[in-house]
Amino acid sequence: MLGGMQDWKLRVTHLIDHAAREHGHREHVTHWADGSETRTTWAGIRHDAMRMTQALRALGIKPGDRIGTLAMNHSRHLVSWYGAVGVGGVLHTINPRLFDEQLIYIANHAEDQVLLYDAAFQATVDRLKDKWTSIKHYICFDPPGGSGGFEDWLAPHDGNTQWHDGDEREPCMLCYTSGTTGNPKGVLYENRSTMLHAISGLQPASFNFDARSVMLPVVPMFHAASWGLPWAGAAAGVKFVYSAVNDAKILCALMNREGVTHSAGVPTVWLSIFQHQDETGATLGKLHTAVIGGSAAPRAMIERLMKQGIRVAHAWGMTETSPIGTVGAPTYDWDDLSFEKKVEIVTKQGRSLFGVELRTVDLDDNSKELPRDGITSGALQVRGPWIIKRYFQAEKDAVVEGDWFDTGDVATLHPDGTLQLTDRTKDVIKSGGEWISSVELENAAVGCPGVAEAAAIGVYHPKWDERPVLVVVRKPGASVTGDEVKAYLADKIAKWWMPDAVEFVDEIPHTATGKILKTALREQFRDYKLG
Image 1 (tube, rainbow, N blue to C red):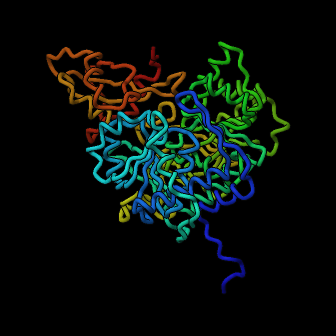
Image 2 (image 1 turned 180 degrees about the vertical axis):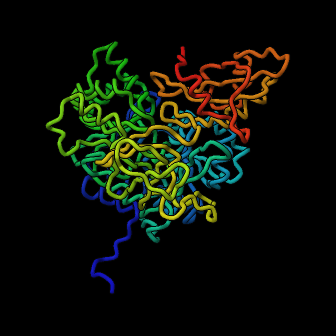
Image 3 (image 1 turned 30 degrees about the horizontal axis):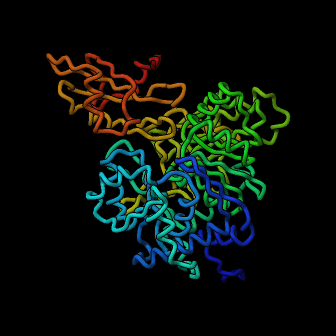
């Protein structure tokens, strides 16, 4: 027997329809890379998104086609999120921080048909254009001089059209994530999963949005679906304030001038803001909620924000979880706790939202579920309606065994459900919220003349959370130096992957099967100090 409710498809175009209808006057402010500023509204975003839908149809874009973006945070990028889905397409946000080999692979694997990009990345586009085999159309969001780009592309269209109407399980967005080995993998989000994620993100325990909220997202729109903010923000009708450049002086000025109440970014963002505050005495204005994710926030950072009366929502997630998995929120007894106890709670990774289930299992026997006792650690697994089942174009290669996705993290779950990450089963290095593949870094390094073997490990860094240190064994008779290794790597890896130090050893520890024993290596360099 069926129920008696209307069949209202969970498609993300409902979000922008709602925002324009119920919050159409609410502003969007963009501070551009050249220092200029523009303003629009939710009604304006929807109108331009519908014009973009028309423009994409005029290019021959069909439902299911991928539309790539290579861009920072601004209102035109937001238009593309809804315009791409409006034609039934799949928005593919590309991380411009990747090095050329990955950018080539990702765009070709996704089979992007269109690329919308910022003028700041024109050199990248020019350099890789001949290597991107599927992209037929290139459109610049902010062309020098203001002509021949995104606005001119939309100009012939009036927005009098309809959104593509398909199944709620059709894909709407594609994000790639790098692992320890092999090529980056695509995570394909559905309309349904994205809608559920957006609605859940409105909870007080998460973003805690309402119509009064003013959000300045520092997390890039190309990074893990911008933590779902463009979708959840539309559901609540928040005012968005964007900066295409992450300069602390500009961010603080915008916070104060525009009445920003919410912001979100990786720990390095807050460190730069603190430095600006210390140098100038700047305040954070009306800011009352700071969402911090990407990597663990230092206790001192959390304390400083909380002492300014700001709620710190310490979040954990990954591209494969859309990305929100857990968020730090006040506990039932919060008002009775001391400040020190509150900080101790916030330093952990928080509790799961409704829609996400967590468990830990024995590292050697994944069928053995472990207790939530705050002591026992094991492999962290997760399931829910916005958790990955398989990677893009790998339909026969499911990543979920049974109902649970193995995150690759090692964690402890406390009796109240609080997550505390203790280690990683993967050997990727997380620096400033971005992943660095230790294996790819090692593979590049062993190509350097004089290098016999190399191992990359993450070492604590006060600003970036972790930075890579490359441990090298020289070939017999070789005298290669650390500077020579770095010079060799310069055009083979992304700039931020460059190891902060190269250390030479007589031998690297190995397992019985010949694999590099990273646990022993990390223990060996446990007290290593960078800089």
